[in-house]
Image (tube, rainbow, N blue to C red; front, side):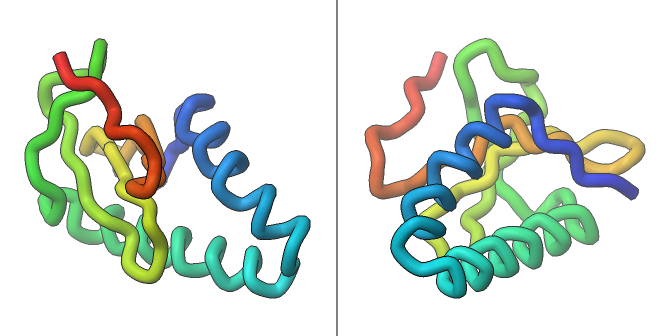
Length: 98
């Protein structure tokens, strides 16, 4: 089972972690660990998230909050694991839906 981040999800992750890294590298490492643990949970339990809609996203998109962070993972379950489409910072403007 694998957890793949799309380029958009990787940019979301970088945009979230980079300012934390500049201010406090140890805090950034803790946040990254929380994110990885949250994604590992979704990999083990891909149906844990609720149905969600993303612009131009696949119809089986799901969303689940990452504990200990303001992030919500929008992902697509796949036979080989999950594909993370977005890591949305809930403190920011909501992602527009279709």
